[in-house]
Length: 368
Image (cartoon, rainbow, N blue to C red; front, side, top):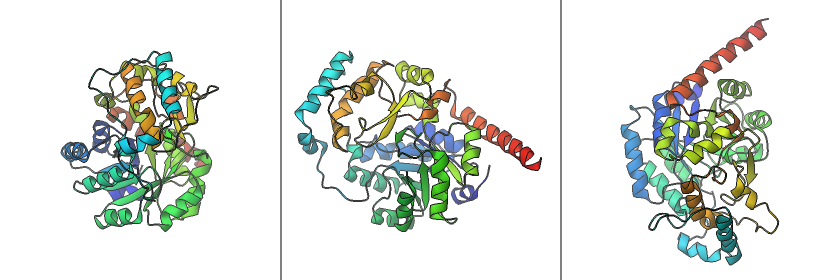
């Protein structure tokens, strides 16, 4: 399993793994892929600096990447406290009443935090500044094309810049603005995702950007067969996410039985694409929390970042409660194949082995 991206990044396999866990990201890099640390959970630059220092020291000198959440246009924004004044009281009341109805207890005194600063443009810029003081080889942006000055700064430092795209026109716009790598994120993916399935989207984007721009297939990829399919559609590698939630290393970040119970029992039809998590369409596990937002009389989700600020404390409480019927979890349709918790190295080995077996079978068919 080798494509030009392996040489470009100095990796053994073109398997890119997005994860909010530094332990998972480091393990993927050590196993020959490229672990990409999601930075949105970091509410201050010092915390991210400590974690990236840990990544520098625990990847055996192998490369890794970081993922930020940064719109191309610079919004007018203050602190989370400033923005919270724009959240309607009816929305706050709905959240409070829903948590009460679902039996979600409050957090212990002194725990939790107000808002999610990592979703603000200014915080995302600080994430980039911190990353450039370390040794990532890739900066990926979850909200499309980063600002052009950020692209130029990263490329001047020797980093490649990647951006997610849910449609060919978005991919073409990214390339026109200087993005190096396109992540073709299909409808099946967890978190923010568009409306076109991977089987259609990947070749459409590959054709739209041309042979000189590498494309990573994303969405619904959790097996070697699916990696082979994505490469067969023209991608030079794959961008994976949900499958790493089911690893032993992820327990260092989120170790509650409710989380694992929720995804281990879920099928591929137990997700929903909704705006309740961030204000933009994102695929989540279908639970009593997501269903409450679909009931008659529920308010419409607010735009980003107001929805983040509205539900941040609620999500902290829900996840701390450990109730698998309520848990708020961004996850893709691949959840139906996540049936056990395993070490990252074992998952990587199985991905590679199944890919190789699949290619041999295809060679046999072609040769026949």
